Image (cartoon, rainbow, N blue to C red; front, top):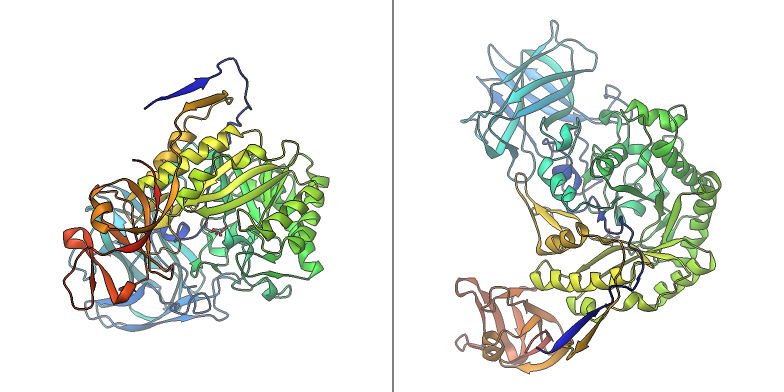
Length: 635
Ligand code: AHR
């Protein structure tokens, strides 16, 4: 190798904002409930409804259970006996027990069940009322699916009377498992009503009540993020804003509105989620602000702009609704920063945080496909925020693409309206990241700052992580323009994946960072003060797309290609290979099934041999020439 890197130690490049790198949290891939939010009971308030997801019922993740010959029946009910107006559905248990029998419900948690660790404490709570004279005894247990193994001594409670009351107890686990069930069984007869059945590990991140799952929060904290963006993503600005009903104030499947997510958890009306599941809002705006503070990051909320981005391409024409959303945004800033004597500052203080959270930036809208409609609304938000809070930066966006007509028009409007900061999003092949290192070298230094609010190359392989790392050198070199950057998405529960790649993966008791996570960590925990100008001389090995028919035996043994994409002759992607195991194991592209390629040949994965072979018609499996597009990175 013959090259030189010249570093101008006396030169002064742009200053780098210590908060340049942050995290993008979105409740996608069950990142909140069943993820970062510590709650172990799934569907704790019986609000999973078919309107949120066709596979749901109020009893999703619940089943009947009985002991000692107990009997009864269960149903989810929404009537005037409900816990409160924002928590509409509850569980009605009709008890017909004889003698010592008990009857009730079993919760199966997330993934394989409820994860418990021997020696740790778990706090149980339930809201309940009974019409049985003399009350209803409750026995709460943690055991395996068939009840043969117990993981803690039972909690015994007594539901007093016909008024909704919260009952609590604590388990100390005697065993470790990732597949426990929580059983709530009642004795006697009569009608018992239950709601908000909850089990929380005592050992949450920083020990906060209603807190966060420790291993996940710690993995995020280990990145030392400069900021936390929340709550998304498409989750923010889509949903049926048209369904808002000022009279009832309660609509399902509506846009993410922060006021739904604060206050007592039993009064947070759950909502349908853009990603197809119910969100409890137990992890809400107060918890997001608290988490950001706990990890030394700036909070960066994103509010809906009444334009539905994320491919939905609709704008809401309802000025009264727009004005309400603008007021909600002003109220949000007061909730974050206002004195305890202010209306919303008082609500923050009542939740336990008298001091301001120090919000200094906020984003309005996300990935808007309709730049003109969006900007018309954005300006209303921006002007109202600036009038009340001149120091708060109001962030706009450039739409869903890294280039193109929408992108150009969005930037034109952002410039024309003097927008301070623009959020750009892009997901691309690793080769794009390698080829676009200089993207920001030519951006206008006097215009809007850029937040690369979402980016990732399309996989979690080492080659993707390296391509992102190479790209980040270009972001950092342009730190005078790119002042914020965040990989996306942050979290994925392996059993509920809507989007990949993701930075951190988990199930109900384990979590692991991707190769991309390690690259982010490297940059995020080593943020410089200032760019030191440098240059490179020597033979540049540029990544080049290679297209052509390559004998499989040739490129399987000669590991000189990365990000190989094999297509059929019409260009349909078939499978890819990153040579990550050195031998050339091919990863089928999800959803392609068994593929027909050139001349009736078939391609199939043979995992036993860690190879993929091809056959044509009835012939034996063998190497076969296919059209291969690859990024040549060495040799
Ligand atoms: O990060 C996943 C999704 O990608 C986000 O919700 C959206 O903003 C983007 O399209």
